[in-house]
Length: 489
Image (cartoon, rainbow, N blue to C red; front, side, top):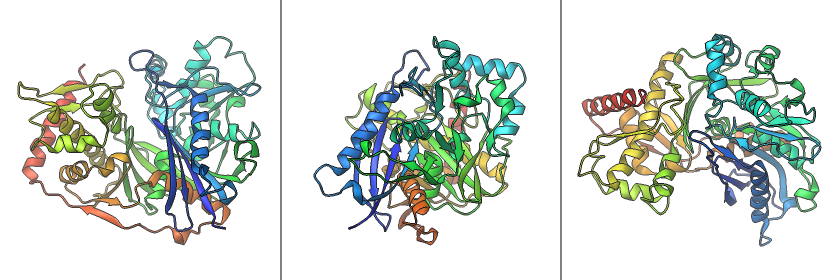
């Protein structure tokens, strides 16, 4: 009987389940969208119970029809949207409030007070992160301070989505996370690889709420048969989605770079076995821990990337599906001078401004929706260039090429423009499921299904820069002017 690894990819807009065979090929995929709530401007929340039920749903879809059976699954890997915060009652299993999504800015007042009190340098030195609402700590504090009955309840647990799903899958037996997710909380000391008592005190968070921190690849526990059609298997990897993509893209060597176009945009460079504290607003994070091997990465985080295309689809109704954006944008030669700065929830790296609002500049009477669509695609590439330029300064190296993944990497117009504006080759693997593949690889490693030597670069397409250098400089200067104007709003 053929054996498979099951990867659960729980993202910001959907939950997916993917079966990988021994050759790391996708044999079946199931997907279910989840709801995002926007109760106030800048707030983004989700229903953690809906996330849990969507996960059960996509697993059920995989085995619908009988072609594949649960007993064929040798292990499970979970990869997830990272900083999104859930607090639940260990007795009831029910969340006490909506999950606060990584994009949400509702904790800005908490963060700004800590900045005013001078804590930012301490936090950056300990965590490798900037002090921003993006991360989990201020979200935990917000729920504890604002939801009735929470602060005095000793039975409450905190977790990022990986942790919550693990707890549910094991029926409350295991409350754990891995180093990659822990490193995104603002409570994790990147040097000691443990929760930091000084930071817990600063955010007024009891350690008893926090999960145990484990290796990225290793057996966390077994899925309860009640959730897996009367069968069980080990859950043997938890990993944040961007670190999973780095592993899935085979960026195992120092200075390897990947760029994921997801709901947000994320560029990671492998910095080897040493953490690098950025001077330019990038984040130092744990890439993975496998036994004694610990790898670190520098990361640039873009809050709005693929979700900009969703905005064109859902709010503006320019296109029926996200995939139609390429055809619409390709119907014009350029953006007609239109520039979009998608600061819907502020701007992430390297600006870290949570107060500015999005802008569309350069509109004329001749502007149409095709120009807007093209400007949206170009904005994704411009934001990546912002990060690559400061990343090269931090690592003191010229990045020779980047690998891309994520749903929007299927957009050839985007990938070619990315190469043009960076003036370096952009490599797109033919296996598009880099995030899920990373989780599957890490889960398979822990159970012996895969060996490290199995992980090689897949076949890929390479896009070479075609734009004249002077044109690149001119366009990028206009982008920078647009960002400067946006930061004033």
